Image 1: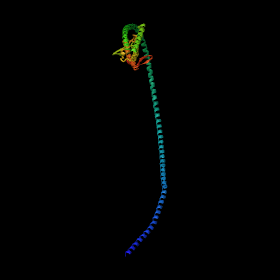
Image 2 (image 1 turned 45 degrees about the horizontal axis):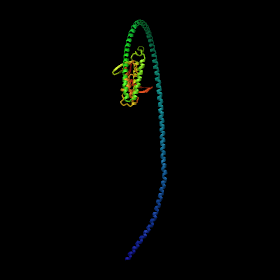
Image 3 (image 1 turned 180 degrees about the horizontal axis):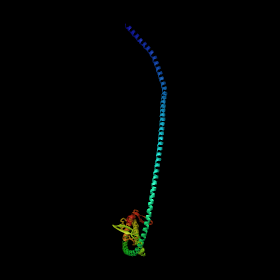
Length: 374
């Protein structure tokens, strides 16, 4: 019994093995066939893919061509429209120009007609004016002749009266001039007397100043003041040697034509007096510059233009005529202090150097004098 079961089991196992082998033999051909089919499909697909790109490019080219044709058509249409508009504008402009020319011609014709009418009217008016002018001239000529006759008669009468009056007037005028000259001569003599007294008093001052400068060892300042004193003394010698006649100097008695003021008072002088005041400022600036330069060379720190002998004297260049000595000295000192400031500080704020002399600037000179002509 047991053996039968074992045999049956063996037969079953054998059958299973045989069936598996048979099944395996059938499966292998089927798989091989499937692989061949897949390979063919793949190759076909690759061929189709290789064929498709040219078709796409062709379609793309066709679309581009259609677009270009459309653009060309649009451009042609736009060009035609533009040409039509230009033609219409030209026609409109031609029409407008023709209308304007016609209007201009009409205006010119109207203006010509108006001018012709005005010229005719003006001609008539001018004839009337000429006739009136002629009548007026005839009347004026008659009146002038009558007035000339009357004037001639009046002149003859006036000449007779003037001849008598001139003799009396000349006598009175000569008397007034004589009195004025006597007064001026007296004033001038008084000026000269005061000037001489002041010059003598300044000589004593120079001796004191000379000793002081030597004590202070101010060599340059001492030398400058010696030179100044020598220039002033030579001026006095020349002045004393000259003979002056007031009556023969027409400039001395010339009328005042300049006005200036200082210290709250107003003064008048003539052209020659004004020139002398200008000279005073310029001479003062020149002397002041040299004095300041000398103190700078001496390195004198306690410098002061007021201590200078030339500043205290203030007479260099004064001739005793045309203006008072006090006036000359005042403006000499005005120039001196400005020149001293420039010389001591070695600058040219108020003046400059020209032709061997230091002279004050024109603007400063006008400011100092403030001369006004009348």
